[in-house]
Image (tube, rainbow, N blue to C red; front, side):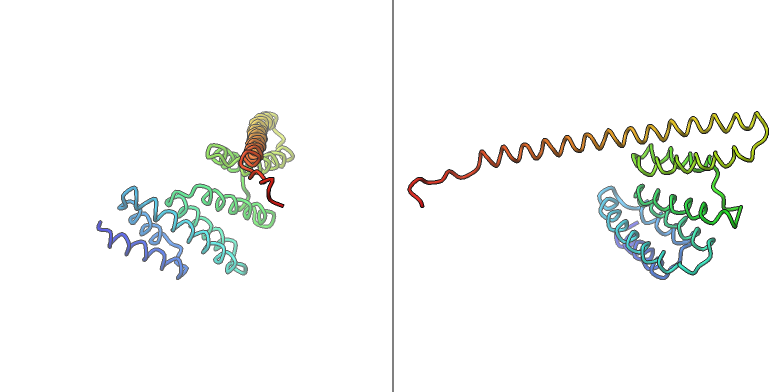
Length: 215
């Protein structure tokens, strides 16, 4: 595919987003345009696409205030898949997290929306593997809440034991995320201290010497 055709495909995708056409065809157009790019072009276009999609998503979700839960989840899924194609994993996970939270929020009145503990756990693991520790920690907490609900309604001893085992694994995952977050925080503080110390030393070394003849 020539550069002009790639540009046309990319423009077509952007145009469809502005027309609010969140469908499989839009994703197919995006995928085709990205696959045809060379490494240099992909890197440049990816950054611009990610910025555009993040900006548009904020506006679009504001427009969905009065829409049904199904419509909102559909758009969140579309953006999650689009961000995944672009390679913006952080934004992809953010969309997934919003969708899970939305389902959890609406599940008391719509049981079919309920998020299982395994879904929360899987999402926590995925977030952890990609280095998003804060999201992993929150997802782990939600998984534990889901397991707690299950334990209150489960009467069979075998099933109850399975829930306890799953809860222990999730707690270890949560604690690992918290430990790594704390470790990174300490490292960041240490690095900041060293940088400020170096700057103070450099400042003293480069401070101009006052001429004794000047008043």
